[in-house]
Length: 504
Ligand code: CP
Image (tube, rainbow, N blue to C red):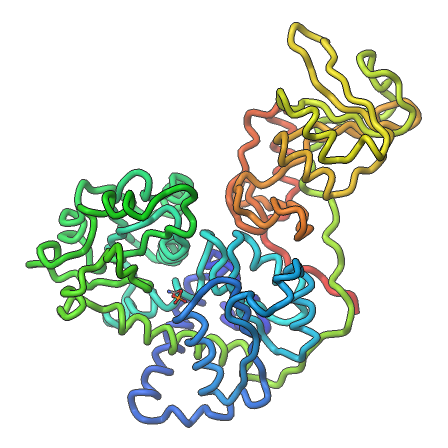
């Protein structure tokens, strides 16, 4: 199997094969050996004249500086921003426009961190140069997972099969546990054990995904129980910035029995990993533990430099050129965010709808959302009527408008207020198209923002529908669609994330 990373986007750890992960581990090990044998300079011209654009919308110490270090030691340069203060993001510039500018700025590769889940897939769709995910919301952090695997690979004698890993801290709001556990799922006989409060526990969708990939996932009652039965314990920081309305003191109370302190590591041979930073106020790792043989997280951070340097070398270590042409990539447009209930060409627009000749009827609106939807669409100024009709015992609120072919922004606005509305397109007094508009279920997904204009798109992941951007599963089972329609729709989706085709 080919393991080339040339010109590739690095978005999700699920895009990697076992062979590719192992190839990167071997490459990272070679970087470590060069460093340890005093031969760092042997690659000092490898990326001469190549530039990394480093776009960090969120704070970072390790990810940002290790990519910069890797680039510098390979003879390349880096540019970009750390925090959005002083950039035009403060003036509401979109991700699409920012990325397009970075391509125009003669960069060769982008590494980006952004608070919205799925924003990195969107950046990759827009960019004409390779994009590396430096962390998107609580979704993924693939290069962290790769450096974590490299650390384990190096410390465990280059073996990954049969590994037992414990997870602790915040398994719910972070991205590193998701990415690392999915990376490990490529290997045989992997056991994951964890102990945490329900609120901070492992998300059910992740447990299901791991189990389907053959990983044994066990919840234990205590950190000690986990520690005794694993080779590595991966502690994580409670991600307060992603918990709305939760106070730090509540988290401190929740973490009390899950902190890593001296009694917990006593008598166990487990090595302690942590993606870092440690929150010094919550102190999920007691500072005394730092000075014990269990502590491996600073070595882990150094493996981050080797891994990222290796990755940049693999991606750019060849004759290259910047492909920016001044053209925007093709619009993704509408398409697979529509679950067609029926194409009803020829059917009258319906007895309960005052006849409209051309326009749109939106029904299956959630109770109480009629006015909000009309206002969001500004129908008062654009031409509309809305009403509640009683066609069964239950009132059925719907909107009819003379507007045809509602743009993506309008459809998204409607779905954000009233999930999964049914859209009926009327032409010449007849319904010609009827579909359910699908929006990703993850409220932090970039497709749910209006200004970014990212159209919801889905793909078929072995029979289940997932968001193209944040890759979360979509639940549509409750819709009034037949199982057959649903199967046909799922089968019509692309089966993998396809790169966007660029015009010549
Ligand atoms: N582990 C990690 O992503 O660290 P930074 O937030 O400092 O980049």
